[in-house]
Amino acid sequence: MAEGDTDKHSVAMSEKNSSEHEMNEPGKTDAELIKSYLRKTDLHLLPLTFAMYFLSVIDRNNIGNAKAAGMDTHLGLHGQQFNWIISAFFFTYIFCEVPSNILLKKFGARVWLPLLAVCWSILVACMAAAKSYETLVVVRVLMGVFEAGYVPGFIYMTSFWYTRRQQGPRIALFFSAGVFAGIWAGPLAARLQSINGALLGYQYIFIIEASMTVLVALLMVLVLQDYPSTARFLSPAERAAAQRMLEADRALSPHAQYSTRQVIKALGDWTVWAYAIIFWAAATGGATQAIFGPTLIKAMGYTSTRAQVLSAVPSACGFLAQLLSMLLPRLYSHFSIWIMLFSSCACAFYAIIATTNSVHVRFAFLCLSNFALSPNMPLVSVWMSHNVLGATKKGVATACTVMLGGIAGLIGSHIYRDKDAPVFRFGHIFVCVCNAIIFVVALALNLYFRYENKRRDMRDEDFDAMTLTPEQVDELCDSRPDHRYSL
Image (cartoon, rainbow, N blue to C red; front, side, top):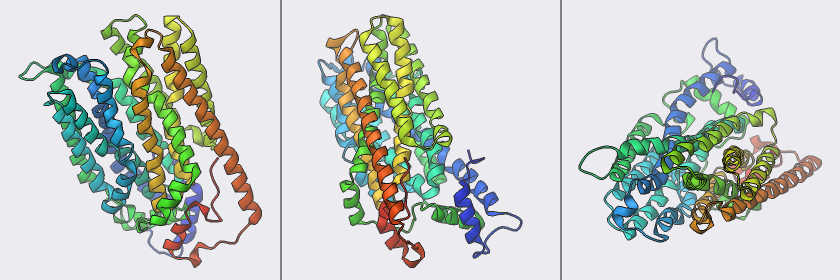
């Protein structure tokens, strides 16, 4: 991913500053050093964080595979109990993302992210031993505490390693792991439940998938590094070139201290909550597809086994769309336009699903709707990361954005109701309205940022960051006069 990914403006600034620092390796320019830096950083950060998100989505949703393997019958679950077991996860998931990002800044990603993974995987394994509805609810509540920090933690971590332009494709790749998990979760669970042993099939699903997560967490401890300035896999010249590039792009400094003032700024900034609303509305569609995809397809008249197989098709469409979202901002840099385009398409597709009785049409547009739903979560995450400055404020803003995604899971667990089968019109209309909300909020942000950029251009304030300490610059956050918002 490093090839052709070098931020030309930041490299130019880096090369200009490098004349003051004779740190370059003999015969290597800053551009060559940064290309080497990106290649090494991608290799050390992306494969394991991608794999961990893949496993976290499987761990979060394997309760559905366990039900298909007979868990509900074995434990005597009835009525809406299974829905509340799913929902229990999100009660704590919603509230633990902000404190988790604050703790990540304190302890570092190398320790904090693997620790979260080990804790939630132990709880996943505990579900194999659960004997009652109440036990499953308690375990799922505790799982939400630890899984809450992983996604915002990854986004926050990348702010220390990459320029804002470089972050985009990497965050999109990261989110694609969640959709990729939807393709493989069913076949993997089917294989695990067929194991002939002393345990029941669904218990093997929990135990073996949890063990996979622990293994990747241990590898993360060995491979991950907290910051470029302390990364052992980089040469001194690569660290110096990366530092100049990141400073030129106003990336986050590893030396920035926790700031209560920035926490208050983030919580009081309406644009932070606007990003969060977009993420919530986009995640509502994604969560319902992940949880109820097989149910919706089975209601079209397919057998249970056939529905499990066919549920991989919409997930594959979403995976391709998220990979596409890695490239779109490079073609046209206005995030709001892409978000409005995809949300309007998804809105139209869900309206068609809700109003037609043709099985083939409903399935086709279910696939198209998943394609249109999937890019908006990574796009709004990158958009937020571009526009919010300040180490603490960005950490809180990232957590707030993803936090509302937890509410999507909580609500999404209940909008596709058995009484609405086989068309499930209520659920489809609900997701349709969510995408209309995305369009309106993205448009409002676009207009506000245009106004604010124009206002700052007209004021044309002199600003020299060299006259301030790094702490003073960091405290200005995105209100610094030379900052312009991405549209």
